Image (cartoon, rainbow, N blue to C red; front, top):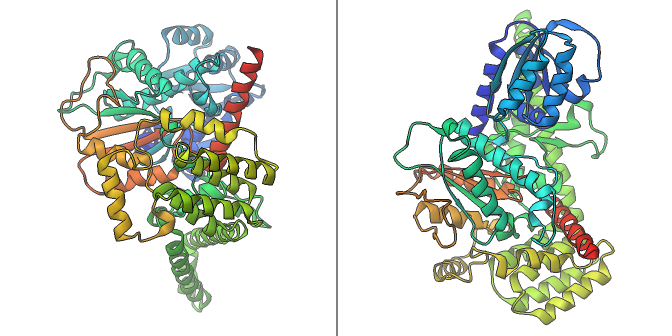
Length: 569
């Protein structure tokens, strides 16, 4: 069972078993869980006539005893308090309480004490404490994502809360999939180790082990917890495949794209849905490169024009009846065509304005090929080019620094100085901070394919053979990790096991969780790997879904907090 269908199944069970008119009450997290898996029309079909947030409904006193209240909330102390207040003076006829994760016994007792009027019909745990954006890709949408980067000296009270939230999310994934995993983590990351160990203690093996007592598989599934800083390159690159490119240039949040800042669009086009579950064209093209997308959209437009022409020739009552029957489908197709055309036109504008084809060629060379002298010259030329934006200058210098930090410190200083003189937005020390966080000494994997003999040989072979497309030649480090798991080559010394639970043989199911966030380039790698029928199903998850803007924002926030803590010392 893949993630999207697991969540949809939970929501269906929640709503279908309760007959009559309903109000669905969510919190700021579960609203994303539900909206990604279900459209408004689907909720209406299940007799949900009102959707409210739990904190805003607390403020209303109006009685609605004709409605049945279905709550779907995270089991936080804040949500329990909201519920207790609402149960003390109930507004609805019935209360059906569903929680996205494991409830504590004390929370159940507190709710029972508050239900003096006996309006609560049921309390259940439905383990959907994650946002399933694609069948094999989930996120936890964590607001304070930068916390994972804070150096150990920065004593942060938020770190335990951050780790607890990740542990909750991972636990709910395995409860939804009905699996008990073997757990491994990246040795060089303190936070990956902490999360792996806490997942074992608080959920899988000790405190809640009874819940994970599922039918044993021949080879247990694997949970691998890794750190974003092992591959800081993936979130810094410009993207050229459809889904990843939309997120990089415009932004996707919970499978929705906000287009309000783009010219004058009709109201129904100001926020559009990009979901592989709800849009057949997007599902077929989400991993295609930008050049092919243009051709495929032209084909879509041509098909739509043919249908429009046939609709114009309405001559008989039968024609009219046929048109009325097909009108909803026609409207849907019209909206779909407009959406994809708008997105491609907008991205083409941004590519032209920011000269991204020029920038991206150098980015890909930095990420994939050697040659420090040529790389320095190419980056210097782009820094001197007035058409290049400040953010692209910063990204180029970061990529150069990550690639050549040990090889050319003098040239690196020259680039730092040039960047500082050119870019008003350049935050002093941000490139140095990324090296301190994710430099070569901190990384486990062979990020640039220049440590491991096998990777060096592979890169040489690729160089001799040439690449199909210079803009999409980069493969994230995750690709190598999946390959190592498939070939049973993931080294115990680099990725130790938690406790004395070891893997016997090759797992058939693997969940890789990236503390610090995933990218759509990585989710594409996972989807392609799953499509290759290797006998292993990979699922990718992370604290957020990154683009370069979000990654830089997290870096800046972590740097600011690290500095302020040093000032206090």
